[in-house]
Structure formats: structure tokens, C-alpha cells
Length: 342
Ligand SMILES: Nc1ncnc2c1ncn2[C@@H]1O[C@H](COP(=O)(O)OP(=O)(O)OP(=O)(O)O)[C@@H](O)[C@H]1O
Image 1 (tube, rainbow, N blue to C red):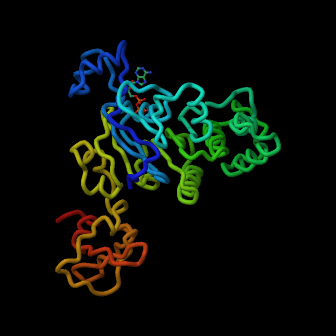
Image 2 (tube, rainbow, N blue to C red):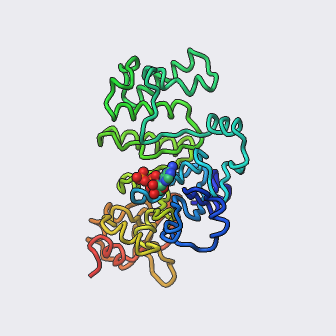
Image 3 (spheres, rainbow, N blue to C red):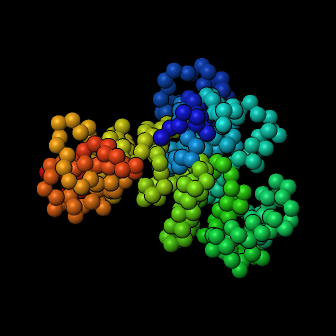
């Protein structure tokens, strides 16, 4: 979807760790590999990343441990300063903001949930959740009402007066999520926010973020190790390796057309029929005689399995959300995905 007017725009972003990274980057510019940079004594946590995140988009970042996911997200919120390149949020170059402007931007626009829950140990659940509202200057009654509402939403009703140490890891994580939900920011940075949750509540939290994105047009950058979670949530998935984005694309394209052998390897165990949609297999109608009932572009090949096996048509019309015919899907292409190529 990359929108014309991205909410977040990264251009050739670098983040190097080492003793004099800026000088090094300037002299070394022009194609040192990750390993060469390491031999020179630096870690290329983020390496020449250019990516846009559109309004209302959920971009999921995946990659092995140490591939640079957290650092990239921290660069986007300027929790770390980049070594090179540009990052603009709503058209503003965030590297040009002073400390006060940065605090305003974070307070007004951004929400963050990190793996470590970052709760205030001497405040209760209620006080933790209401804290960002207090920072915003909201009055006591309103912030209490709002905090109670989101505490209920994350399933912690009855635990408002507990302290973080009295909660399990998963419950603490939910307090972190509630705190970020309380302020309904326009942009969310979520670094494995659900890692400590059990499957049921995890799914509920995923649904909540899907709802916020869908109904309120929130922009979300989400890190996860869990491919199923990525597939459920992502408009696009960015796969990182050694600080660089190997491919950033829709789940359908990542699975159907991996850009590099690494991405292919990364996705090889994914059950393709659960990921690929009829819309992802559409070819132009040219030359095909389209007959009979269309299939929905948004249906996965797995959802269409029974029909694909029983249908006798060589090509099936595919209809988009608006009901118009987008093109044709060759039944054999879909069967190859369902059963594996012969
Ligand atoms: N403050 C720092 N100083 C030095 N090196 C760092 C620092 N922060 C991160 N790194 C290095 O940068 C690289 C990328 O780290 P990062 O935390 O972004 O990876 P990640 O993909 O988020 O990993 P994980 O999935 O384990 O959270 C790693 O090699 C890490 O050791």
C-alpha cells in the first residue's frame, strides 16, 4: 500500500554502533558489507533502510534475533539517533527536532509498547495506565474513567490497585498495552507486545489492534517473531537480515515471490494456501472465457479448497471488494499452492 503521503518515511537510514560511527559512515560510504563493517569494529544494526509506512497501515517487521528490528523501530521514534539518512514523521525531519519538540511529538502522536514492560514499580495498575494521560494534562476524573475502560479491555478488571510486582509477566505486559491504548496515539510502535501472553488473550489483543487500525486509521509498526501473528496482522511484512530490509511486501508476495533466497528460506515452512489469496493469483482476463460464479479476491486458497477441487473450470473469475471482476485465477495455479506443484 505505500501511500503517497507516508506517515513515516525512512530514506537510506543507517545506525552504526562503535566509537566514531558518523565519521566512519562518511568515509566508508558506498558499499561495505555487514561483515566488512564488523571487521572495521562497528555493528551495522540498521543498514541503508528505505521504507515508507502509510496512514492506517500495519507494517510488520520480522527477522532473526539481532537483525536490527528493535533498532529500526527505535530510530523511527528517535529513541536512538540515526548515524545517516533521513526519517520524517508526518513530513517533519525528526532529527531536526529539539528535545522539547521531540517530547511533544512522542506525547501527542506516538505510542510504544516494548518487550520489557517499562512499568512504574511504585504505581498501581490504575496509576500506571493513567500516567500518560496525566502527562498530557487530562483532569483526574477523565483519566480515571479512561484508564478503567482500557484496563477492562485488556482483561485486568479487578486488579486496578495491584502493583506491577504482584502481577504475572503476561499481566504486566497487558498493563503496558493498556497504557498505550489509553492515549490512542496516531502511530504505534509495538516491539513484540504480545510475547508474554497466552494464545487466547493474545488473539484478543491482536483483534483490538486490527480494530483500531481499521476503524480509527491508526498507523502501526509491529515487530514479531511469530509468522502466524504477522500474517494475521500485516498489510506488509518487512523481512530484515543483518540490518537491511531484504524484502518489504504484502504477505501474498513475500510467500509467492520471495525477492532473495534468504526470504525464500525464511518462509519455506509457511503453509502457502493459508497466506495466498485469490487476489494474489489474478492474471489479466485476456483470452480467457470467464464463466460462472466468481470467487472473492480476499478468500485464501485454503478457504477455496473444496471448490477448487470440485470445480471443472480452467479459469475462475475473481471479484474485488467492490464486486467488479479483477481478472482471472487459473485453477491449476491455485491447486499447485494447495497441493504443492506436481
Ligand atoms: N546500544 C547498543 N550498542 C551496541 N550494539 C547494539 C546496541 N543496540 C543494539 N545493538 C546491536 O545491534 C544489532 C541489532 O540489534 P536489535 O536489538 O535491533 O535486533 P533485533 O532484531 O531487534 O533482535 P531481537 O529479536 O533479539 O530483539 C545487534 O547486533 C545488537 O547487538
